[in-house]
Length: 136
Image (cartoon, rainbow, N blue to C red; front, side, top):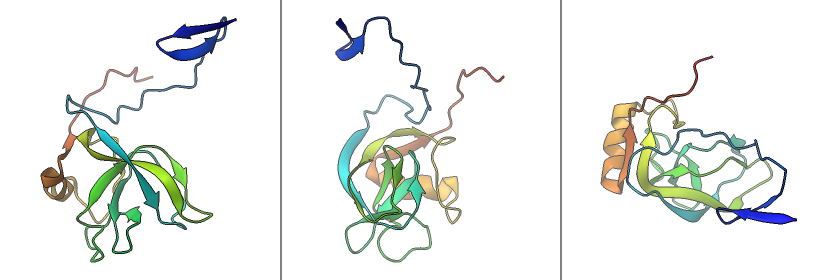
C-alpha cells in the first residue's frame, strides 16, 4: 500500500530518516535555483559552495583573486556534485536568496565581508544565523 503525505510517495510503515536539515537557507527571501554546468576536475563540490561563471560559461569555485569573471557572477551550489569525471550538466545553483554565513563554503581568498559586498548587488545575502541544534 502506498500512502501520500505532503505530495511525496511513502510506503506505509516505512520511515525516511536520511534527511538532515543543514541550515543553509536563511531568511524570508525565496531562493531562486537554475540549472548550471560545473567545470570538470574540481573534485567533489559540496552543497553551499560559492561558485562563479568563468569566461567559458561554466561554473567554478569562485576566488576573490580570479580574473576570469568567476569573481563577479556568484551563485550558491544547491547540492553536492562530483566533478572528477568531467563537466556536470544540469547541476543546480541558487542565483538569489538569503543563506547562512556559517554554512556556506567559500575559497580562502574571500573574507565574509568581501563576499557579502560582491554578492549584495546579485541579491545573494549571507546572514549570521544561530540554530537550535542539540549541541551534543
